[in-house]
Amino acid sequence: MSSVGEYKTVEDVISDLNIMIVEAPIPTHVAMILANVVGELENTTIPTHAMIKNLTGYIVDGMTLPELKQFVYDDFYSIMLEDDEVFYAQLESLDMKPEDFTNEKK
Image (cartoon, rainbow, N blue to C red; front, top):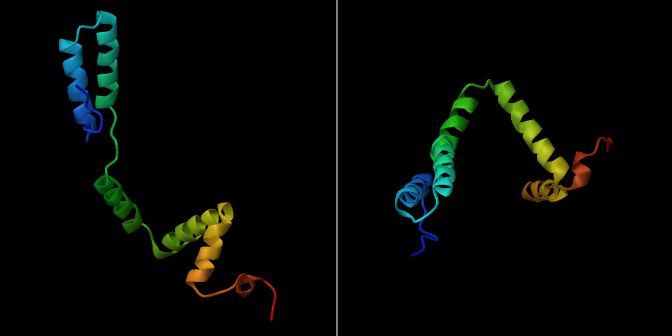
């Protein structure tokens, strides 16, 4: 029997590992290794979408408008610095050209 594709949560994995530890015909030292894995998994919090959304809301709600603008500026700047395609995609979405953002006076 295989559980491939059936794991939806870490708790599902922990449950199966606990069953293996107790019921599988495995050497004691292997059962101890699995028990250690269970312990590690139980102490690991995997962020859910809801947790990420709530934390993001908390952080943003605590920012002043100038702090928020600086954060967005830094984020956009670093993304466009790393990936030219993002720069050009932003220009296209604004119906603008690179020349519109030079420091040269027209």
